[in-house]
Structures are given as C-alpha cells and as structure tokens.
Amino acid sequence: MRVMVTGGGGFLGAAIVRKLRARGDTVRSFSRGEYPELTRLGVECARGDLADATAVAAAAAGMEAVLHVAAKPGIWGAEEEYYRTNVLGTQQVLAACRTHRIPRLVYTSSPSVVHGSLPLEGVDEAAPYPADHDAAYPRTKALAERAVLAANGPTLATVALRPHMIWGPGDHHLVPRLIARARAGELRKVGDGRCKVDHTYVDNAADAHLLALDRLAPGAAIAGKVYFISNGEPIAMGDLLDRILAAAGLSPVTESVPPWLAWAAGACLEAVYGACHIREEPRMTRFLARQLSTPHWFNISAARRDLGYVPQVTLDEGLRRLAEHLRGGGAAAGAGAGA
Image (tube, rainbow, N blue to C red; front, side):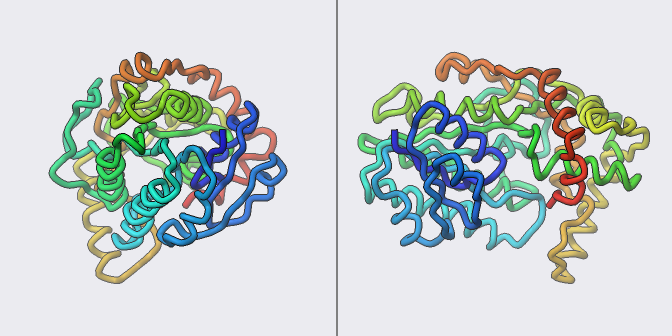
C-alpha cells in the first residue's frame, strides 16, 4: 500500500512509519523538519506546513491512504497557532484526500476531546464532548475530530483513534519532562496520586493505527467511528509517575499539592502569562491540574472488537524497555527535550 503519514518524524508517527516499512508498505512522510532516520528506512520525505493547501495536496498525490498523525500538542500557546495546525491543517488533509480520490484516512485524535471537569471512569465512545475545554489543544483537536468524522462518506472513509498518554523510549514530551523536573526537585503530585488514569505504550498505539488502516474502506464497519486506545491497564497516576521515575533510576515523588490549589495556580498563571504575552509554558495550567488529579480511563472494548486491537506491550515490559533505553543515554538526551 502507498501510505502518507503526516508527522512521520514525530514520536508516534515514526513508530507507525517503522511498522509500515517493516511489512513492505511504500511510505511518504509529510513533516516540517528533516528526518534522516526516515530516509534511511526508505521513506520518501516531503516537507511543508499542514495549513499550506498546495504543499499538502502535492504530498498526498499518488497515495492510497493517509494516516494523519501530525498536530500541535501541549498545554499552552496561542489559540490561533493550535487552530492553524490542528483544525486548518486537518481540513487541508481532508481536501487533499478528496482531490486525489484517496479512499482511506485514519486520524489521530485524543481522549482529551471529551475531558472536561468531570471524572471519566471506564467511559466508552458514547461520552459527549464537554461544553468547553480548558486549553486550546483539546478544543482544536475536538473540532478536527468532528470534521474528520463528518467527512466520512461513499468515496472517503474516515476513522478517528484516541490513544491516551503515549509513552516509551524516544518520547520527547512526557518522560523527559518528568525526569527533568524530578532531578530539579520541582515535581509534585496533584492530590493523593490515587486517581486512576490510562496510558498507551507507543508500539501499541502504532499497532492500533495499522489495524484501523487495514480494516478501513468506504462502507466498512469502522468507517465514521471513533475508538479509545490504551494499554487497558488503568493505574493510579502517582504510581505511574513513580514507576517511570524508577525506570530512570530516580526516587518516588513524596510531596503533593491539593487539586484546588493546583487549579487556582494554573488559572492565575494563565492570566499572567496571557496578559504579559509570555510564550513560555507555565509550570501549571487548569488543564494540566485536572489531567493530574481527575480520573480518566476508558473502555477499549470497541477497539478490541472492531479493530482486533490487543495491546502487545504491557506496562511492565514497556517500563523495562524504557529503563534499558535510558541507561543507554536516553536520560541525558531527554532531560532537556521536554517542550
């Protein structure tokens, strides 16, 4: 199959690309940067901005399917920047699929699109979007997800996947940030750390994308649907943080702050940073406070049933692989990689 992967040089995108190439698919990556490691895998690399209709259309020419993984992540930043990449970028991908009559589009969404102020405990895909979101990322991802699902039809089949908290060797966000803050003595738990959360080892998230790709076609049972993806191993947030730190040879987190105080601090920092036009990410935001203190784990029965999804890498095995990676130098490289 000829497949375009947007964001093919990113953490999840690269894992997907490696699996596609391993089974013999022809892959074209569309990203903003240069990724020599993809070229070495035999991947054709196209560079451009997702919001650039001409660049996206040119990259999609000749493809039989698109995996739209690229996005602007994070918990802070200008709304228009998130909108440009996550919403307008997705609209350009949809337009390119229509222009070139590409029949399959797998979209990487996020469970945060349904995360408001209430706990999410074992919810399935019937969970509604909240009236509003605490941050630009989930708000724009929700708009993009809705656009993708609405685009499903007789000539273009679409499906959206919601992998939660992707981690593993090579992560440039969650793991490096935890390690850096722990080493600086700045890491705190929000609340007692007992709220249960889901997580997804990166290879499992990549597997889910290939499973969806292989089952997707106009009129297919999964077309027009959305699926939660995780390891299927909900764990207390505090325990997950401590086990990731242990993989890096660091001590558990012993200090904590009340959830209400973290939320209030986040609200104040957002106001100050916004008024002063500070681009640097605040230490705390309302969205982050709720993510760290509110249960959010999901029922992945639909993915198991419809996609044949079975997580292959357990939490224990993933942590073993992470520890091995960090011992090999990943810890030093990752300490400054959080963004």
